[in-house]
Image (cartoon, one colour):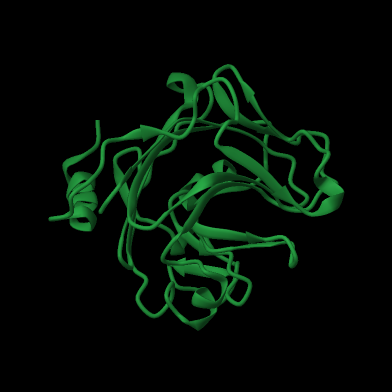
Length: 237
């Protein structure tokens, strides 16, 4: 159950905003509605697949790769996203959930903001990182680059490992205008006003920050095993 505080945070994003019905972005069997984006040298690698009813990224034993993304065919502006995520102790890699993002095949880069998902240091999960090529830094908390320490993360957080109740964790992301909220297992992690950040000139140039695709990340050179399921979205009109 989502906590009262988390519900208030999500409500603040969607307040007085008509919402569509929830609809699924994953049929539990195939990757229909999604496509892989990567540099040409990685396009033949089968890192993203469906296993046991979950979208699975498995690059264990195969660290020789650049970023490989599983990208939604559809794109979204104002929305509420909810999904479940499971990490594994033998996996030390990093992942993330991109939103309002776009892949540039000519540049070989995915621009846009990301909800970090990092089971090895689970306190990071739910914080916001900006993959936009001119930024490449934490935006919640606001930091100058990719470096971050535990003391800069949330005061309260909860993450279930694989052996704890099945290991599944609920993540919710809500975007209304420039207001972004993330909730992990009922705890609000990020409550961010992206005005002047997600709508600046660089984001406008790449067509991201206010509208774009979802994407799941396989980080460059990482050996990652992670699963996503029950991926649902509703549009805030």
